[in-house]
Image (cartoon, rainbow, N blue to C red; front, side, top):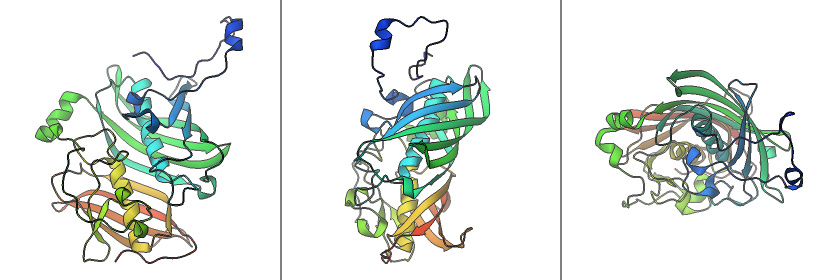
Amino acid sequence: MPLLVRQQEHTDDAPVSRADQDLPHLTTTVPREYVHRAAHAEVFLTGCRRLDGGDRFALTGQWPRAHTFFTDADGTRHDPTQAAETIRQVGLLLAHSEFGVPLGHQFLLRDMEYSVSPENLDIGAGPSELTLQAICTDVKWRGSRVTQFAMAITIERDGRPTAGGSGHFTCIAPAAYNRLRGARSAETGTAATPRPRTVDPRRVGRSAAADVVLSPTDQHGHWLLSPDRSHPILFEHGGDHIPGMVLIEAARQAACGLEGDTFEPVQVSTEFHQYAEFDTPCWIDAMTVRPAQTGMLSVHVTGHQEGNVVFSALLTGYRRSGDASGDR
């Protein structure tokens, strides 16, 4: 497969023309197909090159100043979940461009961990230019393409540590995926369905009702997962199950709903146990647990469908000044 996203470099043996010298360095995003996005505006990576001929990679990226979803409620900082989406995009990009996984293959994200440095998330006068380092391990091949791998990543902004994380990716060929999913493989995430009343966005760290993915119940720490399936970011490219990023967002909103909207998770670890289906209610439960670090808060969140655990997440963070009560 031709590599379309590597940053080009001149070698000592390659002549450099005057025209090359005069041309400015131009930046574009990586192909949107390689990160499974429909819109170019939702692609956060701009380049990739392999280091030392191994499974280490240097990447570049950019976070926009004003994103409709990955910006905090007052518009002054990047939302921490943007780090999770960036990690997801790096894994998909490396699979397609570096490991030979054909377009059209599906990916199973077994787990994802991410953390952020809140002091480095402030939005400046221009887009946030990122440098990223990714190391892939446990790479398993079938013929000329990878079937699964683990990845650890660091994200810097202006030389300052901004975020990091890891994940395990499994690559599934279309025929195998259709056998795995059966009739569900024909479903789509953009179908119009009645949506119950959602939680007040101010109680779950959101400013817009359309971004809320939880509906209230009469039980403390218990919600119904009810995302807007026409949401332009969460369901940007459709699919036959509820995306993992929706579940990560549900965990964050549940933690804020339990602890108050001033709770700011800075470390999130999520395990995905099975696909979250559209046609069955998914119940979200949150409970406070003892944090590993003094002075922090930790919330454990689980999602259940038909009595089975769909995902589980541990969110650890701080409470910002100006405490507010959670959704009860």
